[in-house]
Picture 1: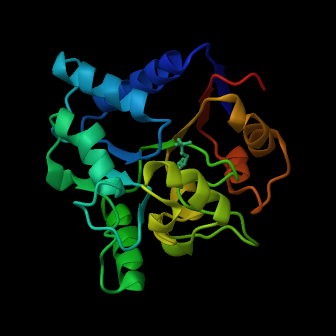
Picture 2: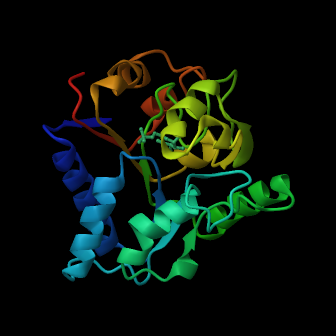
Length: 237
Ligand code: GLP
């Protein structure tokens, strides 16, 4: 594990955007695993800027997102598909057909989970996975539990996650109770992982995840076992 302690959110975003840019320059047909939440927004802004300047070309890049709320349509402003289109895909020269997010409106949820896992395999796996971390240690929507889920699956969101994510909705009642997420196994198979965390409110959980026991009660703790993990954080650990 390599930890980059940086001064500001802007510095964190710059480092992440630079690593992703280097990845795409080195392999223009990279498969990028992407995340939502407020943490990667600055990274996406910079990638859009670099692309606009002609410094990086996403023409042949493919992306797979970590997760999606179950029940939300792609056009719903709270859906992760909408978020990705707005913050990144509409601002870079990627072919939208090469961008993948689980379908939150699939009729058969189990079928959709299998399809998504299969899709990631058929793309040859993820070259670089970007991650944020939830206050309870979740990555994607892998909530604390008794075991590490292997593959893409449907989850019941924990109360603290629903509460934390309610800031993006009009009311807490509007937050979906279920989501589709890549499994811990799916994430761990990525060749490289970049974990971003900023803000003092993430300090305790980040410490637990990186230096505490590896346990499904802190899903991100499994990342300690990844052989190419880069952590970029404003937090003093
Ligand atoms: C959501 C996402 C996660 C993300 C987390 C943290 O629950 N499913 O992928 O890491 O929020 O969000 P934020 O970056 O806004 O703190």
